[in-house]
Image (tube, rainbow, N blue to C red; front, side, top):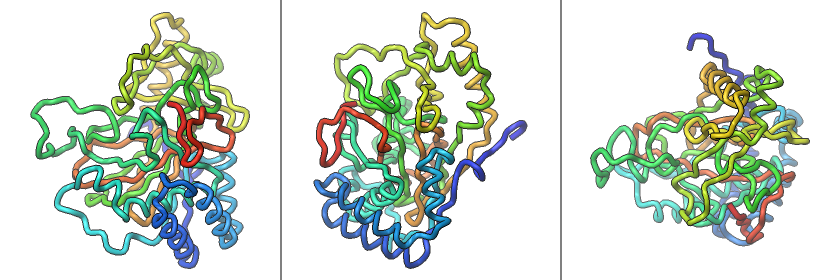
Length: 353
């Protein structure tokens, strides 16, 4: 890509498990999955216990990699060399979503996510208005829009812009976009992080990651200040529960944060300029969009032996249109210890969206 740059080497760390470490992680994940996985009471505390125990087997270099993520020095960790699923052939077509959500293999991978999150001190959670308030989240083409139509997909019917469809999703952070760290206006913050793995990925379709610290560094002071003003509007995700609440109020894209320096909330397909925004805000949004197009996204091909942990306030992620409708990713959202959501249920953790 002409004029592009990729910052993977300095913004993303590659964390490789040894054989002994992988077996320790596998044993913990299997125990958690037998208890019901992330949506079972007690799973969160037990996953923290297992993460603490696993740290005793990590090298100094591996602990430094975890610290780099905790301190905001890198925006993602690529975990690899974990034990793959032992027997889990790719089906001829994707089973129904409810069947997939309750499959032992799915719960195992989600349970493993919980332990990996525990290594950086993060805790998985669910929003009350999304995904039936469940922590375990499936990313696959259930609603059409992929390269090949689903069996029951209506011709020319627009597919929703969500992880439950097969459409291309441009660079974005996960919603909601009201705030990033402390609850505001009755809304809990956006996820601090998300973690992904693939149960099935027959064609090796990649997840794209755009580290944003170099992009933010290219903004001038006035542009950064404008992006921190309430000059932008976002549309709600189609997967959120629909209600009679008014459209979201204007919000900022950048927000100061005492821990990481800043947090970012942005989507290439959900953000627009507020009608009352000043010209500086319009120019700043244009500059941000231009800088993002100049970034060569880093690509990660996931399988059941790898996972990608992404700081949702420091990086954008996305994907191309889904080519093989059997592709299935397992995902959890997580909060950092500094985050203050509106807690509705503590175990498992459910927050107001």
